[in-house]
Length: 244
Image 1 (cartoon, rainbow, N blue to C red):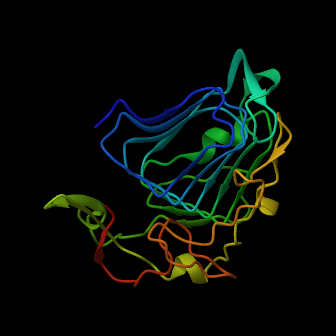
Image 2 (image 1 turned 45 degrees about the horizontal axis):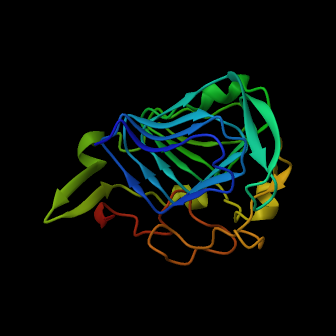
Image 3 (image 1 turned 135 degrees about the horizontal axis):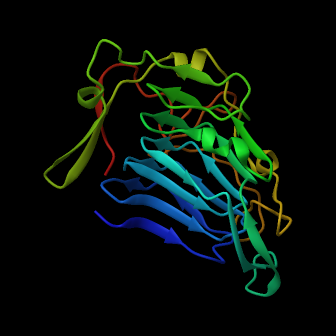
């Protein structure tokens, strides 16, 4: 119930946003004139606008997106980037689009990733699943697109967040095809590579590598074929998940 759920303005370098439930916001999260590396993983984005992206050097991994992506193609402001794990200034740069990674996410409803098609810097995408009108970008080879997901049911009744006694429940249909019709690669620092402008890797604060080895609930992910989205291998039948 905010204008923006989270707003990360310049110098959000090294930030990780993980394990959050976003809903009923004007925009769930806004990355503004950051050069990365920054990481958003295992989040549930349910607002009409999920992500506003006016930055580069980011990674979005194992999230659920039920809203749109707003992409800024270019921002001429010269904003700072830092030395590794430091607040020491390394330089300034403008803000072209691209240099962003989307791995193993679940896109539903109005999520249109084709806005990335004209990005200036490289875009890396793999392992994503697109449901009921969600659109992939041209950068992903063989995306799993399921436009007939819940074709016999009303989407609003089969994909819904509800509140009861202070807890939030997500009702959602799961499908084994998300695992069997495509393979997802485990996400590590090696896979994510380096943010282009600061030339820095995606790392933990102590410099150790990152591995997205658990899901939204803290469950261990499959080591060879993790499930797309924030939930690892949930029972594939209609159910309510207590998400907060």
